[in-house]
Amino acid sequence: MRSALRCFITCCALSSLALAQTKPATPAVTLAATPPMGWNSWNWFAGKVTDKDIRQAADLMVSSGMRDAGYMYVNIDDTWEGQRDANGVLHSNGKFPDMKALAAYVHSRGLKLGIYSSPGPKTCAGYEGSYGHEQQDADLYASWGVDFLKYDLCSFSRNIGKAAPGDEQKQNEMMRAAYVKMHEALLKTGRPIVYSLCQYGDDAVWQWGAQVGGNMWRTTGDINPNFDRISLIGRKQAGLSKYSGPGHWNDPDMLEVGNGKLSLDENRSHMGMWAMLAAPLLAGNNLSMLTPETNAILTNREIIAIDQDPLGREATRIFAEEPVEIWARPLANGDVALAVFNFGGDVTFLRGIRMHLREAGAANGWKARDVWARKDLGRINDKHKFTLPGHGSLVLRLSR
Ligand code: GAL
Image (cartoon, rainbow, N blue to C red; front, top):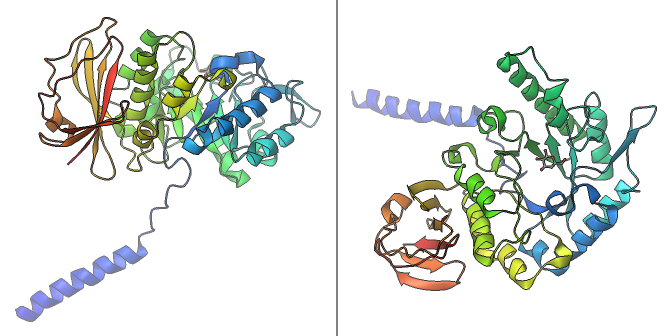
């Protein structure tokens, strides 16, 4: 009996060892292991962006300290594209005389270069898209030294990927196939290129974005530098956290920090919300007009550490009662990040709000660090008293 039991234990151990040896190891995520950080030309320059602007952005990312804070990708958005030649090879337009030289310049600054295209024949701004030239374009990007591709649906669903009226399923299948096609083309180049899907959250992209090879996917329509729009986008991310993680991120669109007339509180709430959401941090401001205030927000190391936390767990909403919401996320070292947002426009005194520490994964008596104030608050409990201005927020890092 005893030997039978011993055999059972040994056999189990041996077979699980054999299993462990035959099971292929999960490959470590190397591309976009944390949410990509960088800068993108669209929010400020839109269709006017030139080679000079990209070089200047790269220089300023270095001199402002943004690169050293983690901003790595310098991304050219739409309107760089020229015409295809007789062999179908795409050329950049007059605003970008030499892409290879531009990539080399960006790389020489210790940064990476991003580019933009569409699975349709035309991009959103009406420039040449990649339809029918996917591999040729992917090879071209790789030969230039491109490190990131934003692939924007645009004209695809209006013509090429248009199914019979009402056949939504077919239409969605065609869209997914178009994204797979470019993913495979990028893989074939052998160059690690971050793949950013942009189709505005259609067909619940978060459910399949990773399967078609996306390292990130836009979950919404376009952002603009208006706090109502920014907060609406942020709040709409509730429920999406389970879909994102190392290598594949929900993307609530690029940052507007420093653009428009956003106030200090609004800029901080925007940045703090994106960090809680483990969102890609792609600044979209004019870096030649970077103020010390905007720079301090964009390069706040403690906020960035939340965004870039290696556990990669996006925050969930644990409390919502107009105009206040509380979001929380667990961090790799056992800490918890908790953020309280006052989405209302009025100055509101929030003395009555319970902190919801237990729901956040913490507890009464945990230590709190106010991330924007860079101040240790000591041990707090659910009745912690604080006030928030309209559109303001409190971001705490809690530890045992
Ligand atoms: C939009 C996209 C923007 C920008 C623009 C360029 O569809 O959402 O982020 O890329 O196209 O034309």
